[in-house]
Length: 283
Ligand SMILES: Nc1nc2c(ncn2[C@@H]2O[C@H](COP(=O)(O)OP(=O)(O)OP(=O)(O)O)[C@@H](O)[C@H]2O)c(=O)[nH]1
Ligand SMILES: [Mg+2]
Image (tube, rainbow, N blue to C red; front, side):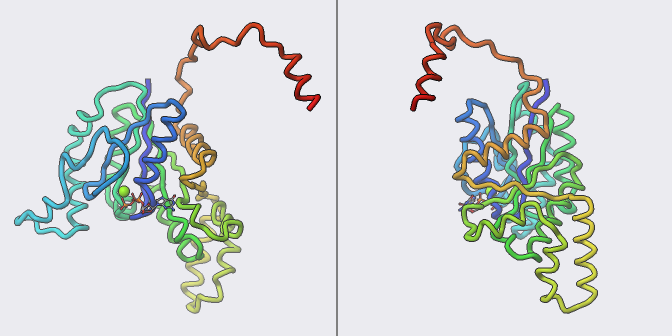
């Protein structure tokens, strides 16, 4: 039986930890068991129960305080992640060998991890060796998406993770509840890059920059490479749609056995459907 994993990625503060806690609560309501692993060595607090925490292996503070290393916070984090990549035994031990488990990995917010460092890719390959089907979940804060330039840079970050990890990826726009003018901003979810460029072309003065922007827009548009699903932590229906997309991409549920109803769950034999329909048609 396969195992299932979501790699929850995205820039700093995009809502990764909130996503993990919202998703576990949602899964609990659906009677599904979903667990979370914290992979952020600099995490201070999160409000979900963890099955494993990278801080048991290494902490950024210790790396920064170490006299022989002398890293700052960013270099320290990269060091921690490289140390983690050399010690996957720790993760294997923490995860155990449970068939059919479903795990969310709450990753750090450093964008370098998704653009050019090899750690995330190594993690994906390792998880696949342990029979996990992995879906990348890339979060971008909706507050950065209301302007075309910022939007393009968010799209490029998502695309870069997609290309370097080579796994199915679902892109999510978080904090949708904070958008004031949600109708106009919906265009960012499934963007038409040409019109987006036109919106902002008057602010671009350099012709070279204009040409580069157009080339990037062409590329994204031609291949319809990036779409976003909206995520509002207060909207159960929306959360369910996101979960369904992710489940579909890793074929969750296809191998599950059909559960026989328990005796107590049977329909009462005296249920009279005719009466029910008469009641509703009469009202
Ligand atoms: N209104 C609103 N706020 C949110 C939502 N999701 C996250 N936030 C807030 O955004 C801030 C950052 O959220 P986190 O979940 O810590 O983000 P993160 O990506 O884990 O951050 P780092 O781990 O530091 O990279 C917190 O103050 C959250 O309360 C949301 O859907 N709506
Ligand atoms: Mg976090």
